[in-house]
Length: 168
Image (tube, rainbow, N blue to C red; front, side, top):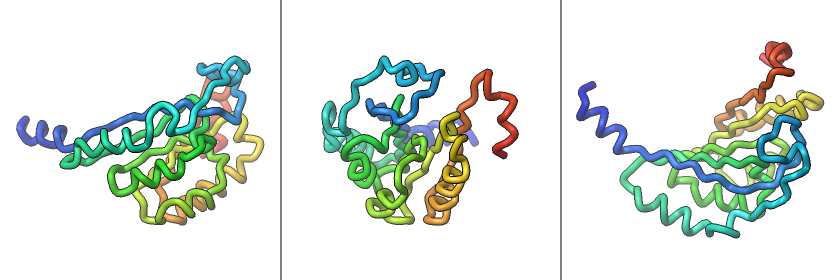
């Protein structure tokens, strides 16, 4: 591949990360956002600071480009009011990656998005998840059986390195 071809590929794709301020239902001791210590309280709905239409208008400026949108937060995005509608509005416009601790009911997702959607579920296996790992694993399998791409992200710190092999 020559330089011109490489530059064309890079111009044909845009990656966007949308950071949303979401509450969290976990209290991880290592949380850099303050949820673990109880010092973090603020959260908004998807439409409080920027409306869905503003995000969509931004993405539509790049209509000739393949788009990948990463929805991230220092909390649990599926707790945000309007999140499923927002993700549904991205369907067809962009490949979407949703970071989640997987505590949501998959039926909420199935009602909002078609099974062949372009949604990737980036699950995070936290220490809090380990107490109900069988449920976590079953949800991963259920999502995959419905056609969603599931990626498990193992949240590791110095206290958990030894147990990392248990979840292969």
